[in-house]
Every structure is written in structure tokens, then in C-alpha cells.
Length: 334
Image (cartoon, rainbow, N blue to C red):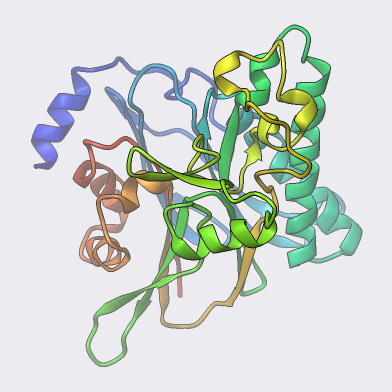
């Protein structure tokens, strides 16, 4: 299976510095390329090791991802930790690229102000990133109105002082693999909340937020979507569904709603989970929705647990090679 998949990918695309031709950000970014697949066998972090793999569907990659390890502050070198980001873009690469270039810097600034890592630091970093992209759309509205219809899911993980913070908007997912003492088995623990209209509880949340709009979520072609347009209910970007002044010409008519709206249809507010790392916690999988469409949480952690550490992210990608994903994997060392 691995050999045949690698042969297929090798024939698709020649090597470059990164899948979209841009230099990769983050720790020890050099990796390997085979066709549409980019992967890094293993790298060292403050919190442990990581393994990474990215597969893209074509030469235009709308997704970005990064890992940063070291100081999480612009002023305090002792505030050490690890940052992981998975940015699953849609409508174009601009929003995911913007998050990749700004989210971590915002986080360091706010961590410096508070002199610690916290839920509020992460929340402020998300807010500043959303506001920054909104300003970009506003400034370029007359020449690049299509930017208003570009967005991205955003999954962030931060490990600092034995605490793991997971923040998410959209439908990417973070899964912890925890060892069961006595049996040697590993069990999956989901650490992120997903924002996709396919989940009944998410539809109820949307209806409660928009009680005056009975059509806030619509079943279209057997898929639940916000206003019949988009499945995710939270994102960075997608300004045309958050600010009515961008839901008009010169934006292309296929993006414009027939009626205006009084409050944002999508939110950029992250759901944040705080987890105190335990001795039995073995690893975390950070991945976009493409992985989870093919593997259950438990199957994914079992595959990682039974695979060599240096290629576990690659193996997960190749198992799901028919669906192209962005995936990060990080190990917590004991």
C-alpha cells in the first residue's frame, strides 16, 4: 500500500521548496517531497517530537500549516513552549496564508503583555488575526473584491508549562492518544469542538443565535449549509457572510445573498479546550477534516500507536491518499 501510493504521488509533481512554492515557516522546516506529497519524518520541539505530512489535490494549495517552538513571548525568553497551526483554506489561499503569517506573532505579543500563556491570550490572537484580515479585505475591496469570499478553518495548539491549549474555528480536529496502563492500548480523546452544520447541536446553536431567521441553515443536496452556501459555521475570513457591506457588488453575484443580514452569519470566536498533560498522554494528532472523513478518532490513534514515530504522519496521509489533507502530528516525550 505505501509503496504503490508513493509511486503514484511521485509521478504527479516535481519537488519544490514547499507544496505552494513558498518557504515553510517554523522549526526545522526542511522535509521531503514526492509528487503532491510533502512530509517531514521527525523534528524536535520544546514539548517533544513532531512528524508532519501534507498532501494537496493540485498545484494551487489553499491550506497552510506551521509549527513554532521556543519562546512564546516577544519579551520573555523563559516563556517556552510549542505552537502548532493547521489552516484549512477555502475559496483561495489568501486567508490561510494570512493566518500563517500573523497568528503566532499576535499570540507572542499578547503573551508578552500578560506575561503568561492563557485562554485570553489565544482568544485575543484569534480576534486580532480576524480583524487584520478584515482590514485587508476592506483596503483592497475596490480592486480585489473576491477576497471577501475567501476564508479558512483555523486549528491551533499551544503547549506551555505542562498545559495544552487547543483552539478551533471550523471543522479541523485535534485528537490525543492516551495510553491505558496495564493493557498497553491507546485510546482517543477529542480535544477540539467542530463547527459544521452537519452536526445537529451546531444547527441548534445557529438557530438559537438567529431566532428571526428560520432559514439560517438549509439542507441543500443532502448537505446542511449556512444559508445554503457553506458547511462551517465559524472561520477566519469569509467576510461577505459577516459584514453586509461586503455582500454586494463588485463581489461576484454567485457569492451574494439575495437579502441583507443584520448580524454576522458566521463567527470567528474559537472554541478553546485546556488540558493538563498527563504521564499517560502519548501524542496529539492535528488534522484537517479530510483525515476524519476516512478514519475514526480511535482508528487514527491506533495507526499512530502501531507505526514508527518518524513516519506516522506520512502513514496517516497515505491511508487517506484519495482525500488530500493537511496534517500535523506531535509527540509528547516523557
